[in-house]
Image (cartoon, rainbow, N blue to C red; front, side, top):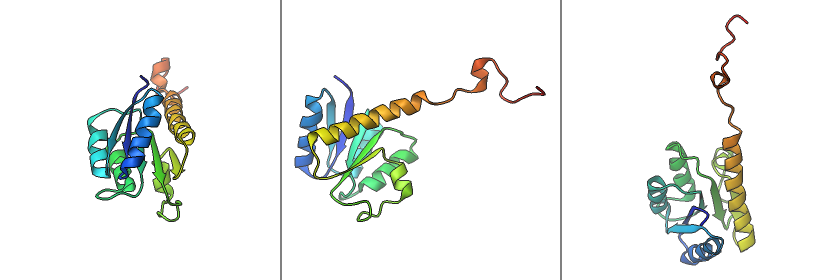
Length: 145
């Protein structure tokens, strides 16, 4: 088993499709039907990635992502939508909070590549963090050197 994914979409057919795609790829998939349910699940458990629709009732994808990021949760997020970024009014701040944006309709191969790419990118970002100078036995500041 690879890891846990959270799928958030108000369309039951898309949830079923993504559960099948990622279940067959070795992931454990949990689903939510709106942003409120998805946010509660994301806050309650650790996920390797989240796939979320952007347009949903109760709490849309943008609101769910903003609240999740405000919590300090940096889980990779793949946003899915039937609209262009202009039609859903995504701005630079929104796009910096997501790892991938995929337009519906998409193939199983496309969504799998997007999610696995987001997971790999997040792992690479974590490895690229520069350790503090103290970890190398050096002073944090140049003290008269």
